[in-house]
Length: 88
Image 1 (cartoon, rainbow, N blue to C red):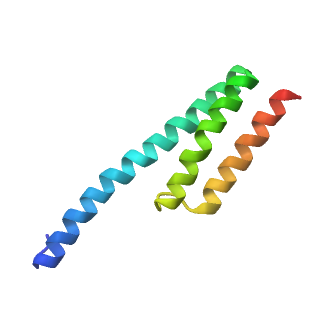
Image 2: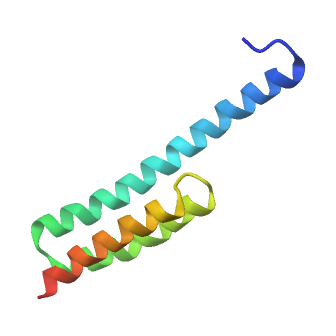
C-alpha cells in the first residue's frame, strides 16, 4: 500500500489511467474483430469499411500510448493484405 501522499496520488492516477487504457484496448479489439469477421464472411465491401473504421482506432491507440507504433503498423499491414486478397 502507498504510504506517502505523493505515492497515494500516483496510485489513484494509475488506477484511473488503467481503466481508460482498458477501455481503449477493448475498443481497438472490437474494431479488429469486426474486420476479422468481415474477412471470414468473404464480403469485400464490408471488410473494406471495417478496415477503414479500424485504422483510426489503431492509430489513436498509438498516440495515446496503448500500442506501440510498430505493433499497430503490423496489424494494419496484415489486415489490409487479407482484405486486398478478398478482391482477387
